[in-house]
Length: 426
Image 1: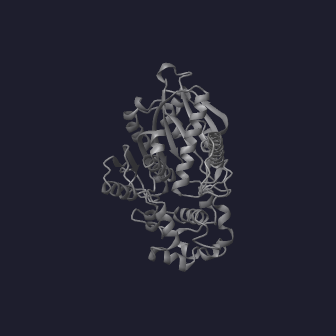
Image 2 (image 1 turned 30 degrees about the vertical axis):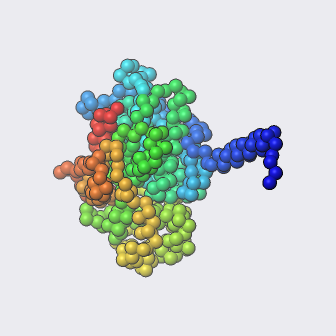
Image 3 (image 1 turned 120 degrees about the horizontal axis):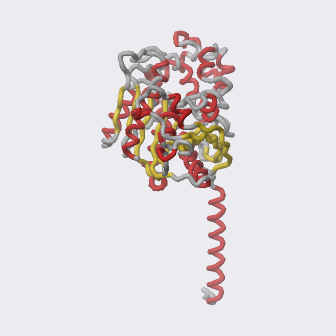
């Protein structure tokens, strides 16, 4: 063997260091940039007095303390396979501009998961502006001194992703985590102080998205260092989506009729099939009968919202499911635990961990869309894994009725209870 001179040894060592640094830089450049703010638009500003008009007659504890600014965001995130993409979202910024010292920072941040929408272009920022500020995230959260950051999810709103993976837990979590990162960047530029405390919440699909985000943060050391999760509270969410679809597969469950069942099943079948590489069907005719098979994919997502789809003939009523699904697929789903759709649902259940932060699951026992049974199933699973931090609250009362409206009516009373718990952690 030949011995290298000292100069040559140093030379080769320096070359190795340079090559290694280049390699790691290339690897870093190849990794998708997540949570980077691309653009922001200031959409609206609501004064404390304007918001108070929406809450006239309510008790003093519900009266707004803050003005609220609405900002539409565009940011970088990832798709279902970790590939780079973009998403849109909204940030609600409280301030004491007109309300004075009753609303001062630093402010805690709430990451919010939005409800299901099949409308491809739907943006929460537009919904808030259209409501002129009479919107629960404004009146119940931001006006009470909470920053609120929410995503429109990949494949919806301003996202450039090619489809929406409805109820896909991992992409819901990454979209919500990244909109919070983008929000922090904007707030830093605006010199608006955050307290460092994080809360998570969401309604319906957003309950699933929020709990998926909580699981991601609490089971990942880097994320738990980045985000100081103080509390969580979710509203009428499907935490076991397997149970939700099995129980409502025929359009009825133990609570009552669920007219949304065919629509939600269709949206999720299409989204899961695209997410997992066509494992449910190669052609829509394998799942849906004609004339539905030829047109169904263009509506999930598409140009219509939930109400538009329900009023159309695109999705049948629950008493005509036999004309909608292929008989073989329809019966196999209930009988076969290895049915590919059931396998995909199980992959996205959220019961395989033990929540750490105080977590409230709020809903109504008279809700037929996402029965409160789902929350109790989650509670039992979490307790079995050793978690003592989860609580279920039923807000149903004698005036509650069993219908779709009850699902929607859980939002405000549950938000009041959830914010009461959040206030203890501020």
